[in-house]
Image (cartoon, rainbow, N blue to C red; front, side):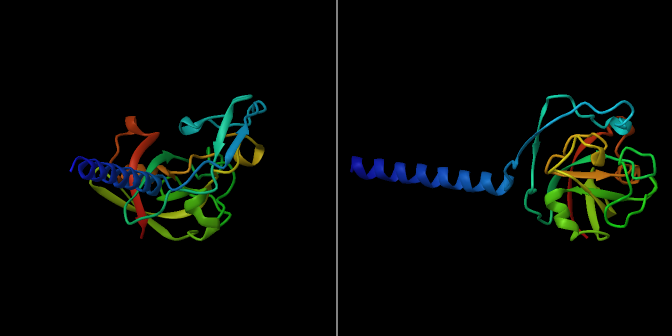
Length: 189
């Protein structure tokens, strides 16, 4: 009887450990692809608008080729970006080679979610604070590269970013003092 009870306990522990591992793997679903070493931007070459980071000499930055799985309610971090000419987004948007007004709800998605441009010019629904806004995907927030001229000497994006114009932040009624990074959910519209 004692061995049966011990065997049942061991089996339950094994099942719990397996479920915990599978659940954890499902939530993260994306492992680092490596690291790149930061270089110091040439003078005036990194636009720190909207609290954008500039690469630091010698610092190691994690890169990702993937993002967590997309669901009907995908968790992400909302960041602020200017897609206007001269804004911290750098050059024109990848999807249409255009600049976009800060008053237009547009976003860039981390590399895995951008999916090689498959979401280009499609809309996603971004939700927070009990509010939602539809925003057009116009760019990639590159998770595989950074710290170079093409990326405005900014670090690679994390793998869970929805980088949004001011219009998205305003539509979600997020107080301007909280702009920068904000937990949200999103889905394809």
